Amino acid sequence: PSSNISFIQPQKGKPLLISDKYIFKLNKTTTTTKYWICTFNGCSAKIHTNINDQFLKIIGEHCHSQESENIDVRDFREKVKQRVKHETAPIPRIYDEECEKAMLSTAAIAALPSEREINIAFNKARRAITPTIPTTQ
Image (cartoon, rainbow, N blue to C red; front, side):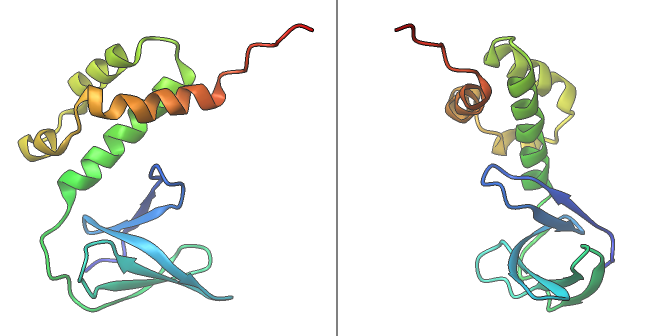
């Protein structure tokens, strides 16, 4: 296991830590240390970082294979979501354009939600930043 870590921002808002193609969520924070646990149910692997997100140590072994497809799908969703928020093009077109650019593996493509499945979340994201139409009195 390496000390090379990165972070992704999922739909729920709390950052996830990525290390060696495994995903960790924040479990607890103290004044000096952040404790991260593997998101895979039943896995006992943990990572400790300092408060500035610098790697300290890894504890335990993973009981499952790496989650590279899951990470690729999360990255894809985030790219599409950012474009949906900042562009006015129709969501299906943005989704299709990003699919073409993504260069995803066959396994990642299989795990990718369809445009229809993902559309509700993207419409919600776009509505959240769209100003409301003023009502006249």
